[in-house]
Image (cartoon, rainbow, N blue to C red; front, side):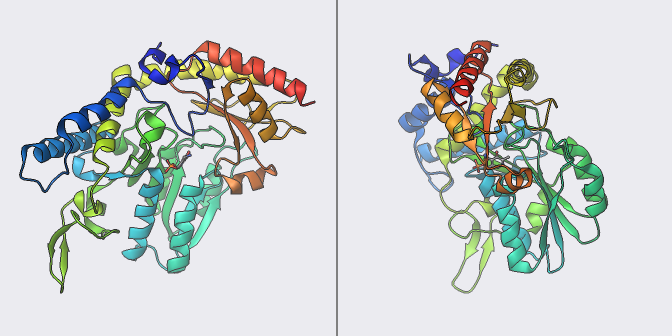
Length: 399
Ligand code: PMP
């Protein structure tokens, strides 16, 4: 796969080796062109205008929703809510569940130890509001999801299970299909955080069987401030709206307001019209290349990267030699991750250092952070070679 040519960012002569894709991705020309096209041809507000431009913008916006539904294999675009990102999607679910009293005092929400803060804190806020407990599901000594511990934690008190497909700090995949089945057997709802998986593996929400699936656009070649939450239609119908304003209403009087149909009930105010259209463009781009082909390409890069890192003295790969689709975190005893990241930056290698918004995980591991390398479809073997050579050199300098 040679998709780098599709990304104007890499045309710059001083473009770095970009291996911080788990934080955010570069954007292909087709996505950037969609912005220019929108603002030079149909820029207008959606849904309420009588004029041609507003109709065109509305059509493009709702076609974008259909594209997201298609990408997720949703049963209907009514189940697709545009959000500002994964974080907003999770907050939407946590807050509406609290509001609807679907989680009450004494109930439990189970999350994984390697959850991102955005899949911890919204549940803690819900817990504080209703008196529910948020319990972390432990990891095995190999840092894998501990299935037997999880099964023993499930009970009639479990209301929600919220886990990522791929942990952003470890890069390990969780058995989300099995997690979902077991949660449903216990009568709990399941939210899957797809932030780190959507750009790397195909998703079929119906096959997965979860109740909610959240992701961010910027991690899949779309702009920041975009994303979607998929929810089961009957649940979205039953739950209350979480933000009030224009578009989410049916009738407003000073005495009483009734709400709009799905999906608009959850989309108060002017949406990120152009951003959502760009999100659809990014998803179509990925579909055009094909997630299986992307996966094969990235898997080969990851193999080369992990094998190379393992050969460097004292470098520990968190999670050992387990397979990873798109990212790996390393810990080097005696070397601060920030120093390593800074030296790599000086050699034009962009990686991420720190706790990766997983402070409880770092605490459990007894470290303050890691150095994380993450690949995307435009990376090539030469990026990996340069990153490995630079890491070897940086570690040598730090000793
Ligand atoms: N979950 C995971 C696993 C993530 O990696 C991230 C982003 N690092 C998020 C949630 C939150 O995404 P965003 O900040 O785009 O809302």
